[in-house]
Amino acid sequence: MAKKSMVERQKKRERLVKKYASQRAALNEVINDQDRPMEERFKATLKLAELPRNSSPTRLNNRCELTGRPRAYYRKLRLSRIMLRELGSQGQIPGMVKSSW
Image (cartoon, rainbow, N blue to C red; front, side):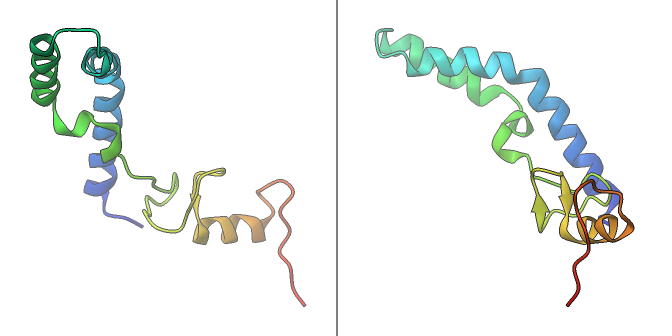
């Protein structure tokens, strides 16, 4: 189980990314538009830099939904390898069967 503070920090980042997504998209559109004057693009860059750092989607980390573990994460199921194996053994994941030989 991951530390609660790390899981909460991740949730906070997710909220910030969602909150500032439209502003970031608009500013990036202005910055990447080569037809606009250089001064306007530079001002948009400064405004983008003023937004909170944690509102950037690159600062998000994939974490297991159940344990908060950041490593060995399966995107399709949003679980870590440990929980995937445990739930698969219990038969709680459809189509997954514990194999033995």
